[in-house]
Length: 439
Image 1: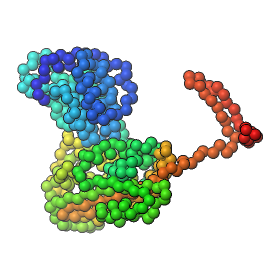
Image 2: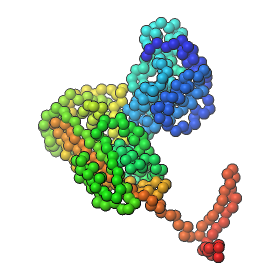
Image 3: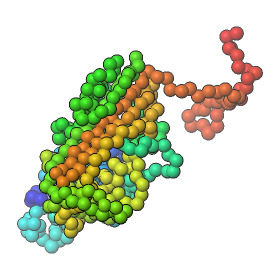
Image 4: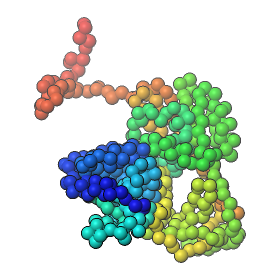
């Protein structure tokens, strides 16, 4: 980092002396990178900004937990880059450090090696080196005491036996493109199972990231009345999905993913762990990493897209667990390199269509309800490269009234007043009194 101004150093020294206020432990909803950067700059520009900074730290903590929960250490690294890119204060900003099972949030101000060498011994003692999720940050002074929180569990992998989910799950971005095309993003959706909860939580963040995906990979479409536009949309993207008909109040939304890449490999065979021989491709000049205790190979990188592969492990993954595990295994910028420079990968010819049963019945407060959800996944892999295509179609019936709860047996009716521990009125009502009071 570049040389720090004297006034900035004095302000930082004052900030670090102040104790954190009691509101440090208040739960704060995550904010966008732009909002965080603006608040960070506002705190840094204030005299005696320790209290303001601790509030910013609380908000950074919430955003860090959200980013890690959704994308692992790679997601946390992405958020750090985005926020620091938008912070205007010179040579300053928040950094995130993963330390064992903890995430540390640091607000730092740094200097380069030359400036550090010109400081007195006492001044140098105020600085230390920090290695964030994005690598070594050099010599830095803490503007406020670091905030330390427990790393969250990967919610995408926490399924209880018997919980209803689909066998497969499509790209979050294809789903986001579909919901965006049908103006369905801002509806107040209600989850009835873990898969619906995962979708609802991922829709808006994924939609916000759509502009970051290279053009032509993700597309969305919506129609009502005539399903032909959706069917033509799927056909244009190499998929044979179809919607046969739409009801008067139905809206069909669709999303697709189209991705392919080439590599130089050799056609060969491999004997797998099951003892059987399969056609395979030997791909050279790959990179490999160790992430979350697993070996991850980088098969392809071009045009802003990177393709990885790793063994699935012993756990049987289903539905959105595959996406959650992949996010967890995506190598962070500081992931150690492994020694592999080639990979033997089976050739693949996958073309699977399935019902997204876990999404059926997902409804919004306006009465809109998912009445049909399907997906198709195609993947081809050989010695020349790969091609992936995926489509998702969702039919939403608008204006449907959610099922009503029936008070068809004797019931209790009561009223409560704010601040009172007991009901101010309560009575039981049975069939003797079920009659129209107007008569």
